[in-house]
Length: 614
Ligand code: AGP
Image (cartoon, rainbow, N blue to C red; front, side, top):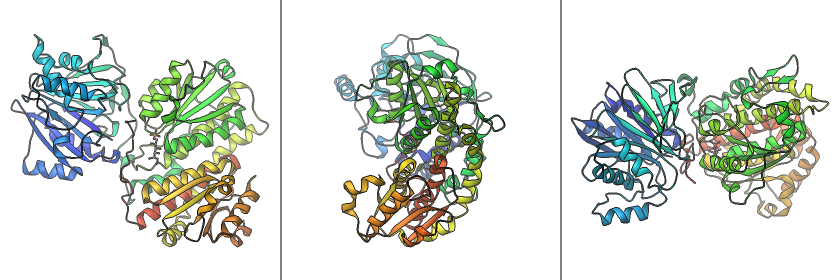
């Protein structure tokens, strides 16, 4: 998705912006550009493809100045091409703009502007913004960029994050946020300030940040940040201190971020649990959820909304909350929720799960829930993200920055968060199950179980060597591990581009069984749990149709070796927590298969880390 970086201060803006953009590469993009004010004129450099191309262009034709904006683009309107890359410049070169989002009414605005004589240089929707700003600036008696931007932006429909620079007022950048087209963070420095769509872009420069809320704009100079609403009311923003460090965002000894993120899950899960569980008194504290006993007792239903991997995490969480807290749970796709007039009231708690905290579909579902009066919770990894800020209460994943586009450690962290949420809800509602204390203790075992499972990577790598040439896979699971079958299949398809279907195992006979033959391996999660016998019978049905069967099985289960062609063993784990363990060999398998196929593991084609368009 698109990324934005801006700088104003006393240093050269170009290297700061390019460095910031390079830290956004993980989001995925198809072109990049930068504009700086040099000797009173806007200097623009843009190129398609990776940032290396833009760097090469800058090396051939350098630009420098103490104020500038940059952008990585993920095409929505207009092909990835130099003339469509941001920044976009106005007709007489006075204004330049970078933008995330979609101008829904750009066709009518473009026609209007064309009728006034504006000549468009790109096929983008963004270009209307810069021409509108110039139009209003020339209209007004005062040459004020903030005012011109405000007037232009009120013409736009849709959600936007925008940064404007102008040679009229060369000391300032104007940043605007409308809706949920990604965040706008303003990093506070010493005699310099930064703007970014994502925290990692400027984290090396500063940890002190202001986040624009919906319908706010900021005028940012080297020495000041002035925040107002779009209606012109002054706002005193809160300054957040971001705790992440850059070391934990670096690849370290690993070949890929995804590999690093898979193998650091013993640590990340420790961080998720740390400080929240009192193992002595068997209690879970989640202070940021702000949930009183009275409020907890009032809730009669939880509705989880999420997308992709986070949605599968929600499916696992349903088992926790229903079993441990005896509350009904529905799990919905964020992208579907608002299209079916959902029944929500003030006794409904809507739980949004989102690693990035900026997924536009999940945010839209949250907005729908808010409008209908639900209690709003979020589980997020990105501190300060929109989903965290708009919720009445939140639980952070504490997984550290997740750079690989394929989510791994955030998935397990969000499952653990929901486990803690279920235990906390049970406490607050006064409905502890007889095994509550044991379930609390079980959480403490997780980091060790995760570590022991990850130690078995060599065996998974070997298996990837045997399987990487297949083009279709079927993943099956039952009970609490059926969402893990869905997640395992998603991991394989998104990074290796192999077609994979995930199914609740009992559904196999209702259709997918028609696909099974020797060319379609079947991966079955068949742990020694309450559905073990059922899974064995699914394995037998697949074997009878000549499938190559790979089983994820519990240590010590020698019987399964006589049924499956390959077995990946995992340590025995309490059934409720087994998804956290069962998913690990599937993450590793997807990773090693993708590496074998020479795929771009961290930045798979067509995907982006933070999906900020509908
Ligand atoms: C995960 O591997 C995917 N890249 C994707 O499904 C992701 O989980 C989804 O886009 C939701 O993202 P979020 O958790 O940041 O909201």
